[in-house]
Image 1 (cartoon, rainbow, N blue to C red):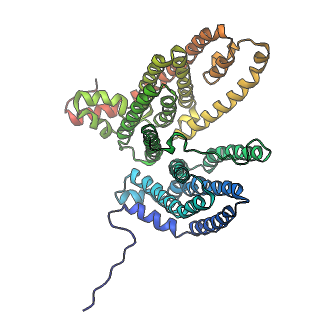
Image 2: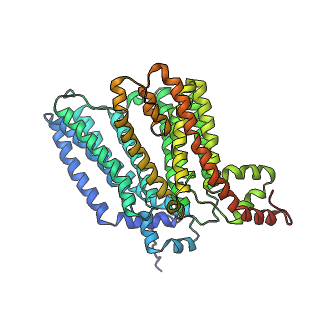
Image 3: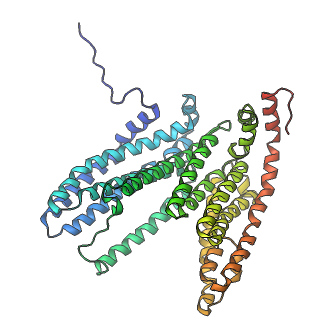
Length: 480
């Protein structure tokens, strides 16, 4: 009697989406070509580096190629990950299999992450060979490889989030513009190093204070890992929100995680005396919560009414939609501004408030303009307006303040728009800086007040859904 031997390439406990994407991704010619070409090139570079004569050039090419593969080529495999599903109309079929939007985008990202980790592990023998032949810092090289892999995983999550946009030109613009600017910067760096701007034996090391197992080094590594984990969660939740059904409550865990991340950022800023980290997180959170569509499904609000008074209070900050997202960002901005005031004074607090008002200005324009408001997804319009205002106003402001820079006068006109105010404050005369900031803050506060008007109308449009939700939980109840 013979027994049938069952072979399985993946265990059953893995998500079906992960297995599907891994099988499709690792069977493509692109993955095989990247893997084979990478190893052929690394073998040649390792042999050249072992010769001694061209070791620095070989090491530079080694770092560049590994960075290109881990931080550019592999993350770009998710460029059309969700867009292809939307275009083919297969998202509804995936939903019928009881796969949640989060599991769909997580499976697509995890497939790219597994391929990146596989290639990173295959590079380890070449790192050891470089250490043996070139006498390099093995710990620093391992840390550099881990940093590149981690950066590639975060970039892959960003690309997967961007793939939820059906407009190919928008995805190409958002990905291509930073790559072009980064490529130009890399070429400039290489030209400076070739022209003698750097000593022949100098090499950039990212290990820094992490090169030893000290308390600060371990804490720094853990903090970087925590921020990277939040960034992956942020981009994947951003993607899941864009493809989730209207009855989804993804906003609740998403905003609670954002609030926890801000709490950690506030604690780190307070201990380190640097408030830039918390301010940077607010900008990303605004991009997410201010582009959520207003929800009019009663079951969404019923989930809050069932929890009594705490649920009704939490609904103002956690319910899906950009209206509650606006209130959520006001809370985060107030907390960060208070922290900046206690650490650095009123100047830094006002600058942070002006920057937040610049983002609220973009959200107000998206809600006021009819063409942008008609779209089902506010993210493309928000992103386009943010890019246009940031680039155009920065360029225009630079041209206009040039004359004031040469004449050593304060450009008071830059107080009018929050995007131009930081530049005007930077070149303002010392005696005028305090008055300049007060005027700029007063002008910037107009925009959150403007945003309150469409927010009130949008909240009123959802009043019927809230009334039905109240009746579902407390029969006979009415909206307060």
